[in-house]
Amino acid sequence: MEKLRIDKWLWAARFYKTRSLASEEVGKGRVEVNGQEVKPARELKPGDTVTLRQGPVIRHVVVRGLSAMRGPAPVAQGLYEETADSLKARERAAQQRRDAPEPALSIEQGRPTKRGRRELDDVQRNWGDRWSASLDEY
Image (cartoon, rainbow, N blue to C red; front, top):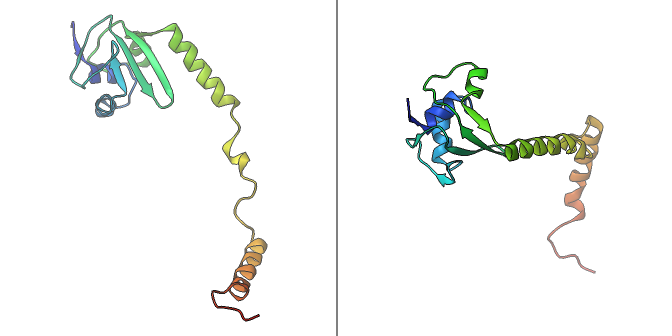
């Protein structure tokens, strides 16, 4: 086998869970071969450079082998070789995610307690009395 469709290869190399998902991502322009956007039917051959975006991470891989069948992960990892720059960028992104503060910690107050809810209701009940659109006479 000398050539294989890009969507089939991405699925076999375990970058995407299903072939239809791989085809969809290629169609959205998130996959490039040798620096050019491609269509799902684009044929891939060993030696091509594939750039793909998976969430916030951009990966650059060189195609080393072709397989039309999806096999175990160790076999799938033999189908490509990730570039050194891509590995460094992925590690940097992972470190940034680990160092980022937990979003839940930025919430100062969450859902009100029963007591807090009653206080809010009391304030809202009296709100209409304090503010009106009518003209007050002085």
